Amino acid sequence: MWNKVCRRSPHPASLLLPSLPPLSRAFRRTCLGPSSDRQRAQAARNGTGALPGCLPSKAKRRRCAQMYPALDGRVPPAHRHVFEENVSNSEAVIKRYSELLQVVSKGGGENAVLRHTQRNKKLFVRERLKLLLDEESFLELSPLAGLSMPYGDVPAAGCLTGIGKICGIWCVFVANDATVKGGTIYPIGVKKQLRAQEIAMQNRLVSVYLVDSGGAFLSELFPDKMHGGRIFYNEAIISAMKIPQVAVVCGSCVAGGAYVPTMAEETVIVDKIGTLFLAGPPLVRAATGEYVSPEDLGGATLHSRVSGCSDHFASSEKEAYECVRNIISTLNYEPVPEELMEHDHPLYSSDELLGLAPRDYSCTLPVKLVLSRLLDGSRFQEFKAEYGTTLVTGFGHVEGHLVGIVANNGELSHDAALKGSHFVQLCSHRGIPILFFQNTAPHAAEPTSISQAEAQANRLKAQASMMAAVACAAVPKITIVIGGCFGSESYAMCGRSFSPNFLFLWPNARVALVDSRHLSMVPQAGDSDCTDESELKHLKQKLEEESSAFYSSARLWDDGVILPQNTRKVIAQCLQIIEQQKYQVLPPYQYPVMRI
Image (cartoon, rainbow, N blue to C red; front, top):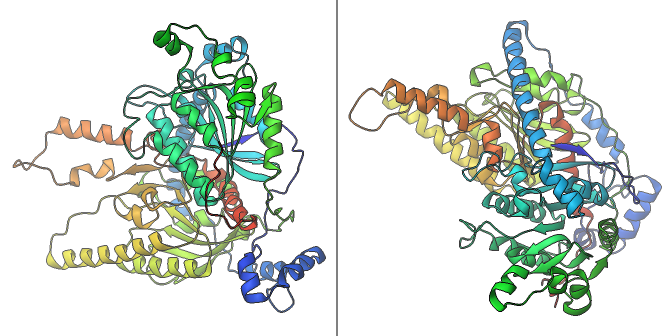
């Protein structure tokens, strides 16, 4: 989901990074000699971007990219009726998506927001982000999480997570929304926070926590490995990885939530509204009979002057977020080059992607039509174009960033899987990020002969080879589900369990073991050869509902639903976010920051 914050950054920085960042310091010193740092810095100042005879200039690389063949993105007349069907379906699901976003944007509802802002004198969570982040678009992660859960609706899972810039540095933020259930942390909220921390670790992003939580909904939240305690474990690991973490106590911070700011490297607390304790005044009264105010028990003055749990005292929320911005400016990150990278726009309109988002698998059009509306200049250097044609692989650029592309174009056959395995390994060896465009085939028919069974076994072995290549590829991976995400083929296409850096769905996407339209083909248990018609109809309806993109996103099986026409912009920003870590200064120590 894309949003816009409305405040000018005091430290402006370009959104676009160079397509080929400098080599790491260790490599430069080991392989190029101790003077190469100074030489490269001088080359950057002179605008050449490389040492003489060492690396080609960006201009040369752009010229090479402009020689890639251009894709023909015209929709064949014979497929025009399918295109129109897809447009109608896309408009319907986008309308539903917009309605859900409207619900989520209101937090816990109008009354809860009024109580939060007027009676409690606190800022709404989205207003807090406007004060914290630079005046640039930020990527909100999983905004639909928590809707229609077994324990009720928890809009946005009770917390906003995403990635935005603070003083020109990409940061992950986790911001509790106290208008939703009083800031109570539900199981889906824990899962959302853990995913934000995972993204911070994968991409080495600064983490900022805006804590305003009334504690936890303890049902299924305490004992297991990936329950609430994992948040605190991750904080220690993130600190040991030398990834900075900053917290703001801008409301109640009770019970387990109190560990979040006390384990961060620097903490700011807001006077009068920020409180920090394991047990609040009601429990103190019940246990001891003593009356104590929240401020005396765990307010900003106490923790700034006595306990030392807070490092910075802020008299207002505005002052607190300015303090966080100042903290971020002390991180000693190497500045990302503020160089505007030239790139061509696709030759075809991104709005036409609505007609290329398949209503179902039978309405799938050639995937190169999709690529022609996403890649710079619609140019694509295809790999093994004539072999395993049900998988399209090759190289292209997205806003100047070189990427490898793996895209479903039919069933993942034996040859296609071997081709995919080969190409993924090439990208891994060359250090090129991989984009997966996933539209896997529904459940295949059972083999009816020995030859078919052998062919299926060979196909499965080839898919296992591709899975291994994807799992072990040591490069960033971004997955976009543009259609179906069915069965085991989704693993080979870097599904959620294969830990892509980011995974997004189009609103038309379907996520299930099998397609509901193929349910009758699935073998049934029991002796009866026929299935009760009404039962089968009920199962199909249930599967249809539970395989939708919105059902998936509500359970955090992805990082959010994005509009097809925004896909290029989202991918480009993800690539910029991933590249930031190459400009960080990493000190040699290997231990976390011990606060007190």
